Length: 218
Ligand code: DX5
Ligand code: ZN
Image (tube, rainbow, N blue to C red; front, side):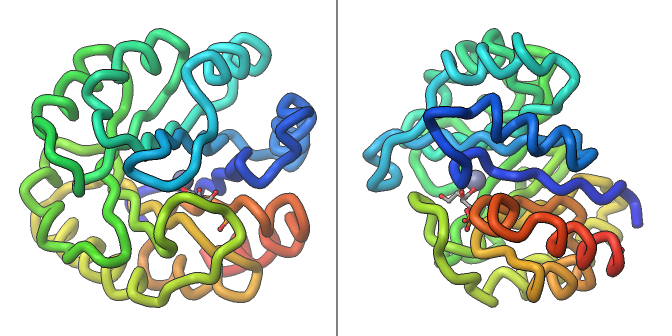
């Protein structure tokens, strides 16, 4: 394995009136990553958190790694705001029309890690040109917008492809998977090559078993 295993619970699956409690739960489980889902009501049919939430979380939990997943039509217009708010990694989707490569470079210039995200219906070939410049590829295993959906196995082939091409290209980006992850399927995604696992619903419902299964497989 080129990377450590990181479980990144999504606070979308926690209690939104008590986000700090959800994050304390993540911290008490011994985890370092927190996944923050940012939605704009255009790229996805839902609204969630903005830079203000990221700023408050960073202020209260400076040692946690804020993995910020932007589901926006115009992510390039918000990079500076999320970087200044304290996001540690900012991932942007490959599907909308905007200057993707320049936006990935901007994230690095602001001193943050970057990631490229791909939806279940998008062919994996779409991300290949960006691989040399990313720290992480996020493979969506549900159509983004809502937590609590079922895992789409199309993600498994994409994870395997990424693992293979990462070796061939001698790169070391992380392979993250997001959507419908449970204690039952986490072993499979790790065996295919995922090293960074997002889990919302399952972490807050069945976190201990999820972590046991993940750590037992890696
Ligand atoms: C979907 C989000 C996911 C979601 C995962 O739009 O990107 O991070 O919160 O939730 P679960 O684990 O409940 O499928
Ligand atoms: Zn996400």
